[in-house]
Length: 223
Image (cartoon, rainbow, N blue to C red):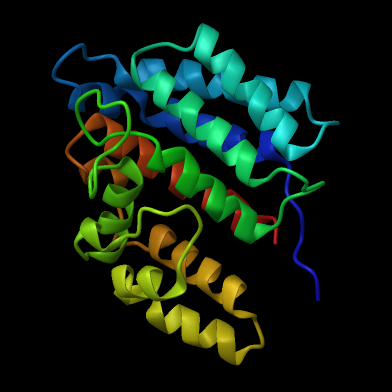
């Protein structure tokens, strides 16, 4: 049985809606400029509109276009990291005509993995990306457990997201293949009640966690 496919514009539209609702809380975490939530609302609006504009093109082409738009028009220094993450996701999805749930989780890893948890390094250092922080929040395990290579490694995902192990086993028992089961485990952890992105303590991690959570929740409702 094939997985359902998803429109990128709809998924990022869900992230935009969630960010708009929580923009003031994320602004409050930003002790430097106090505007990270405002910037992320505008950046997600730009991403969503760009993806919708290119909805007739392949996911890789749409993501590449959104990356270019964000690079030239994005607000705040973090926008350049998101632009890089979108570009890396486009490269990984080259040749795909549509996306399934596993593609979306890989996209999130590329997007949030390109963002340093703090500072302005050209590339996130080991254990220092927003994606690793988000997984740490979701699973309660040290973020250093995540691999640096692109793509989800099943063993590392399950070791990092220990509470999601049961979801993985249940998915496997219901007939899901390994990749789908790992995707479901990741979704279970990020959507669990134990994760509140706003408790991350930093504006980048809070925004990244909110994006991941809202996109995965939108993904689940469209299954």
